[in-house]
Amino acid sequence: MTDTTRTVERVQRCGSRHGYWRGVVSVAMITCFMSLTPATAAWPEQGPTEAVKGTVTELLYILKELKDPSRSEARRWEIEQVIRHRVHYEDMAKRSLGASWAQLSEVARREYVGLFVQLLRDALANRMVEYSGERIGYLSERREAGFAEVKTRLVGDKVDTFIDFRLMSQDGRWLVYDAVMDGASLVGNYHAQFASIIREGSCAQLMERIKEKTLIVKLFEKSGS
Image 1 (tube, rainbow, N blue to C red):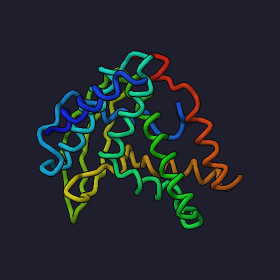
Image 2 (cartoon, one colour):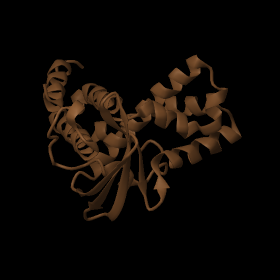
Image 3 (spheres, rainbow, N blue to C red):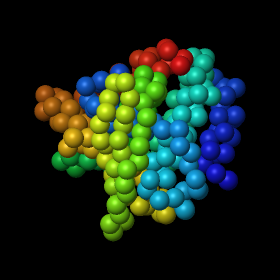
Image 4 (cartoon, one colour):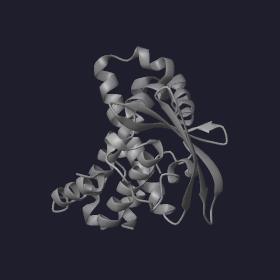
């Protein structure tokens, strides 16, 4: 069963059911996931470049098939599943907190990771709706000891820049754990923002602020596009 088939089945099951921090990360880092090139293999057989393309294909399919505002709940759920299967979100969440991660209990860590996934979900969906016309070219791929880097170029009316995806191999799959544009890391940007909030308050306050933001009706839900 292919990744697209899995997505189709999830959409069928969910269809009948019912700018976070826009300065946190460059629009280009989020929109660089967008391409119309289909995935060519199941996860165990995919290389890093194919893994990125597969992620893009699933997300575009979800946003197209579940674009009606009345299906926003299903759309959010589906996008979150892509992140949970395609992105090394636990590693990203841990590194986004840096040294503060060690201060959290196991319960607090699990809560934070869950909130971080929602943060990625909303940011990604918002940017894909706003910049769905951009094009991405896959330039090169480099692997070393279970890690890989896929260099891409994002081109469109609003941007023309180079983005490097960083992936790691886990259980036979290549998972994205960071994206870098002009030397600026996606995780690094989150870390800088979070560290500032924690310095002024605490990890608990950071999580409360994320919770508050996730309750807001998102742009991609209001637009229905």
